[in-house]
Amino acid sequence: MSDKYEKDWKSFVKNIEEIEDPLPDSPYQKELFKTHPKKKKELIGLGGSKYKGGPYKFKVSYKRSKSAPPIGEAKIKKLLKEFQLMYDYSDFNVKDHLNHNIWGPRGEHVRAQVGNKLIQIANDFFESLKLPEDTELIDIKFTGSLANYNWTQGSDIDLHLVVDFNKISEDKEMLRDYFNAKKSIWNDRHDIMIKGHEVEVYVEDVNERHYSTGVYSLMNNKWLVKPNPRKPIIDNVEVLKKINSFSQKLDQLRDVYSRGEYELAFIKSEQLLDKLKKMRTSGLILGGEFSVENIAYKALRKINFMRELFDIKYDAYDKKMSINGAQNYASNPVKQGQETHSAYNAGYVPYE
Image (cartoon, rainbow, N blue to C red; front, top):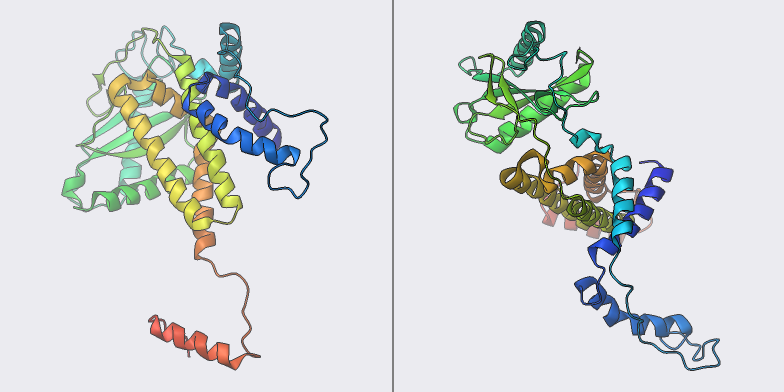
């Protein structure tokens, strides 16, 4: 994220906070009322400072003044407009037709040239997985926004290869990690464009629930879930609150990392990723693709929230596992002996 963009983003988040906790009896304001008098005393020199008098000729009140009234409708509209510009809200606008370059005139079937090429790509990726010979490719699904009415010129073609995880391995987590790694390698190595849209491959478990409102079977040449062009009703204010909440948590995580608390930063980054995943899943289950949670997730992804979160996670892991600098015990044989003795006791045998 560029410095300019980060500055604009933080300014925007500061404004949104008024939506999050505008009232004096909110938990956020109650906490401020508790700590404000002490902080004010310290500020004017009557707290922990050695100077017992502030630069005031009158007695200063340590009470916190009343909060401003709740944010007005005009300001909410202004923030929503900024939000839509910042996140290219057109991604969530529903068109009255599917992409004509991909789908036939009535949207009943994918165009033959496109479908055949996608099947070929999927088969090539399937071969690269080097799975047991009896592994069946159950289906090839075309899903995502290009299989729906909210497509844009920047949308990817999401190609899902369906297999039965249970017939490959009992360890589903290990298998999922393997497929994700192979997917990343494939997507990094290939830049395949179909009618101006990049192709993204993914391996899906046949027992996995899929919440997309548009799913097309390329192997059977038919819709499994036919999309509906009706325009969804989106609670923009709630979307803003979700984004603000996660942004604040990322700010806190940055602070932990910058203090050098790498173990804690790694743990908190994993917790935040898990929270993000649960938020999106619950939104898809209860409200579908246009749920508050899923739109907030997509907006966070647009500003590289996930990329920064993963960067902090991996950097924190590397830092906490690293030993920086070379300790020289040549001038301290006692300490050198203690270090070697401790290593043996811990079960680590130094190289000969």
